[in-house]
Length: 90
Image (cartoon, one colour):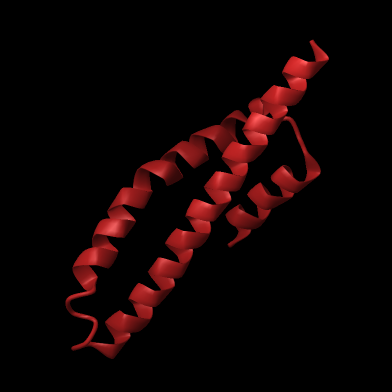
């Protein structure tokens, strides 16, 4: 949760995202892991009715995956806004 809070803080404060190279690397890894999370969710759906613990874990994984996707969309929007502002200044 701390990573998401950090990214949200950066987005909300308008910090120049291009200067945060470590953040870029972390976000790239996060983007790359999302398809695997979706695959696990899809495969796990078949067994969720047999195992209550699996159902709870799948729900948490789904929530985390959806929150991550939303956060990445916000980040992408901020990058585009920053590019537009930079272009307007030029």
